Length: 638
Image (tube, rainbow, N blue to C red; front, side):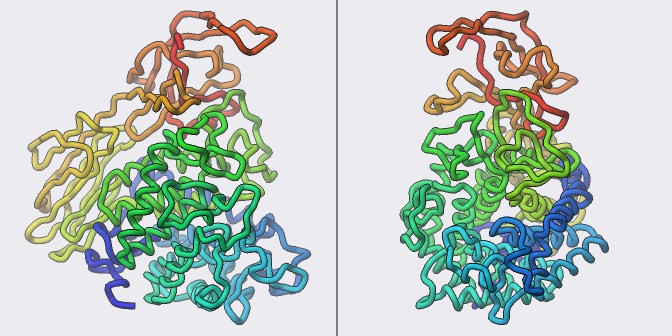
């Protein structure tokens, strides 16, 4: 592998983040180059370090998912194995979260937990590099006998991503060596002339590409390319959901839109971008771009969530976006962030950062309860009846949880949130070699090594609740450098950039402050008045309804179980207003007479005068007991 593949031309030091492409318009600034201090994401990171990661560890330990590796060594499989066929992957995601968190903040206790779990994994790996607790041992199905559902390669993918985190923040250790042996094994067993198939759940593609970047091993990138090219050639058996469920129906280069299982689709798209960027394959990159564009335009919820079907956890058809039955799995939004972030780096287009932001604030932040100890697996946009409080010490069915639950039989989402929050700094900023790009806003500090010297900026903001972002330059190259700030698409009018006291309006996209020096101050003011959003008329489920956004936040109407009117009994009667208590919306309470047949003309009866109803950020809903909730609200008279 050439040196060009090891390091991005815009980076002067290795990037310690989960993605570090060697080519592209922008290069990310790693987790140690971005410090988040307080504010929205500072609190979320603190919650992750103090509660979410340890909560995940406690449940995996309690349910025996970590002990599966010990059982493998002691010959207690399959009798003593617990969890689904992919439970190994959740342990690996937990390790990745631990590694990024330890890079963010020293934590001796977490370091001890990490070492203990890694030791169990090391002992369970077989001599040829194979590592899985579900297959391959006496009494279990043979290795790779169920590529459609077995998830063996998927598990390797999450192992490698944990190893990437460790290698970039610490260096070579036992986990990295385990991942190297596993990657070598994959190349041997699934290379040309061997098992010419793919995994039913994409993930190993992007992991192999990133592991190649981190280790310098070209064969890992080549194996990632092979897997991407094989996908869609029918190597997997047809199933009840069809081959599109695991994207094995159409080659990646030929597909027009993302389809099938939403998480699988996004992980595959991320891997295809990685391969395309490293191999300078513009055809492949444009194919993924084409698919993403149509998916965003026709198959994506207002929150950024994807997946309209509970059956198959899959996309619906174009314009099929029901609110009440929205699946919008948390993991699918993590995959969306991974994909859109990679596309932003490759193309430099700010619209992809807009999509990362939408998913961050309105799905990832929504998934986790305020105490960090319960989660949404799916993220509905409409709760018609108050939910049921789940037991704090029981495993919940993933889709049936009407409120956040402490754990699930399939708990891919909690550790996915944990690893995302721990590595969040790597999403916030990037460089093109001469400037620092602030793609997302959080209070703290960003430092980038540029050819002429380091540029350091302190960021002060109460975003997303306030639209002012103040950037102060505390270190800069002798000749200065540019700072570039993202103006989100929702701020299409009214955004103002002030540089050294001079203000001017700026358009959606990137706003550039040129040649800033130590002591300079750059201020971006974004319009934060609440906005009424109307749906495309082709979305049948949303006709006659509107939603409200403020800044990057989708708002919702939430009503407690003992409120005078439920969310079902209120109709929008005017425009939203900012108030001291937040956004309020004029609404009319209505009722309907019950009839023996639910079809025919119906007239709503006003139950009272117009009332001013508070709206809340969607990510806050469900934190204070059972409630009804709507993102999309019917308009009076429709």
